[in-house]
Image (cartoon, rainbow, N blue to C red):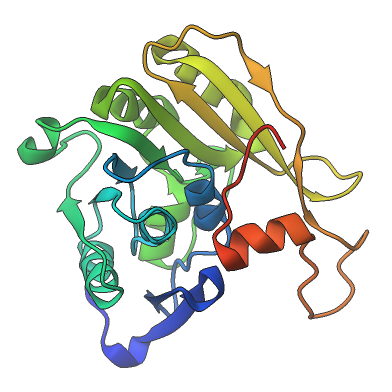
Length: 254
């Protein structure tokens, strides 16, 4: 399967600093990969691998925010891998996109290690939820590879002293922390709160390869200003807006 140009939309990210092609139907990136990219504490000359990179949103947001960051991605769905390559080229960014599965990482990628490994894994376990009708959307949202395998692959591809950062649903946090704790140290948790006074629906979890620092749980980032969604207008908090629209870093200690 592949998409014609008519089946794609060209969407702006980071306030127009990136323009990325996405399928009009099926899985479409929202703010989650942008928040994930913003949480990467990277500098020029370092390297980043995005597991399950889709159309390249998270990696390319990180690359736009940190010039000189070497980018790579692993994607098992061929049409999305092709889109990631196209999106990188049309935004003037270099990104090596490898097509393959977490259980069968391409040999070229197995020989590499990265300063940062990031992932926005499928959120939903299909033993407790309903499959999406569209195959490509199901591939992005419905878990087929266990979460533990995602973390194991990320840790193996990470350099000693490097960082692994995931974004996931808060309900999966016990499982995610268990997998991180078995392979990484210096864990840091940043809850993402939809509105003030509301429970976190998403979390960012970061761990360091061979890290030894104690676990830290940081104050949550509030995404929306209004107490409830009442209009079609955006109501991001100033801090969230700067992250999503201007490419500001998402600092855990804020």
